[in-house]
Length: 114
Length: 111
Image 1 (cartoon, chains in turn purple, orange):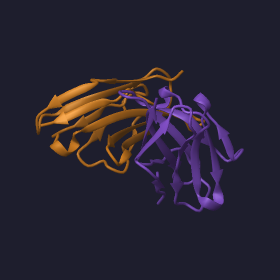
Image 2 (cartoon, rainbow over the protein chains, first blue to last red; image 1 turned 90 degrees about the horizontal axis):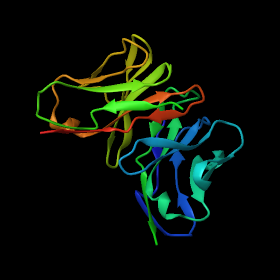
Image 3 (cartoon, helix red, strand yellow; image 1 turned 45 degrees about the vertical axis):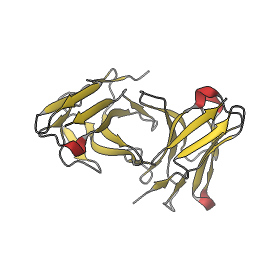
Image 4 (tube, rainbow over the protein chains, first blue to last red; image 1 turned 90 degrees about the vertical axis):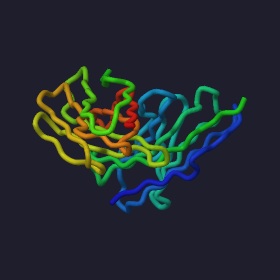
């Protein structure tokens, strides 16, 4: 079965600094990959997704992620953090090549320091 | 854009008192699901439904029931809630492109 790990349950960055949130999955079969963001007291919303097209995926709010098959990774980055980026971020991976079953990682809480 | 609504947003109840959390969508998506969110565990799927009258267990179905009598609605039922079901619950729909749209969440406390 697929599993997802996110290194670091809490990450703090200074405003304007690079954001790097790590995600690794377990399957050797390239799955579909997602990053979701959850702002306080809200549901999750999609940041970006990889569905076997370009390996570098651009999302909303200046975020992007790169699919690296050899490393089974899908790390999320943003060149310059903004205060409004403070939120919980979840990496998710499909079970196989179907959207029906998606496994979520435990989440990484991002703090942005002024 | 797809919208998912849940009610209530907050609920405090006691052990054993049956409750229902409603979920409805504003479009005609076939796939709906329920998740619970717990610290350090991310989201875990409770039940999902691929269409009317078609439901199936997710990863943590024990203690929960669902029904899908019409496409818009997918209520989550706790027949006899217990304190270990204290959690944040999300309903979601799945679009054909693989994006899930989540409701705002229901924070449930079982005393």
